[in-house]
Amino acid sequence: MQNNNYINDVISDVMPKKLKEFRQRAGFGIDEVSKKIKKTPAMVSNYENGVSIPSASILYELCRIYGIEDINEIFSNEFLSRNFKCSEYLTKSEFELIQLWRSARKEGRVAAKTVLKAFKASPRKVENQEDEPCLKT
Image (cartoon, rainbow, N blue to C red; front, side):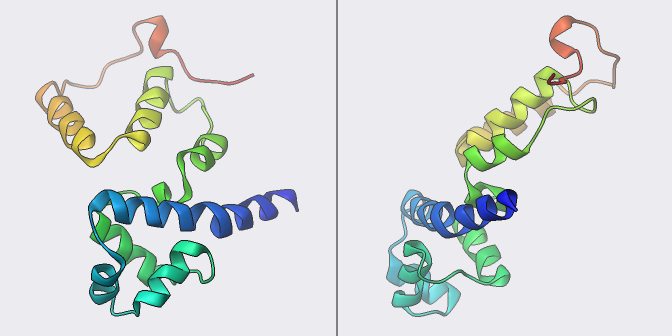
């Protein structure tokens, strides 16, 4: 199946790069991360170079250490945008917000949550064109 090959490519090519990117963005060295997850520095390097794939529990721990709230970020925004489709359950605005959320840094997400909580309103019906269902044809 072509889809399985694509997922394997994401895991073997994209995930290692994203792990390194998030480690660097969080300001950690390989030695520091290795101590936190109780693995050797060589193993952390192997994860970042695609030589080894971390187990689900290690991947979860890396996300926690790096401040990643959504594990899907490890598989890149490109992967998510290809596989996350507009549907009758989302409006155009909601779909756009999800895409922005997934590309935002941690500080941006905290700010967005704060603003949205401050302006929380009661549920309402679709009122304008921007809030029409996001169906792709």
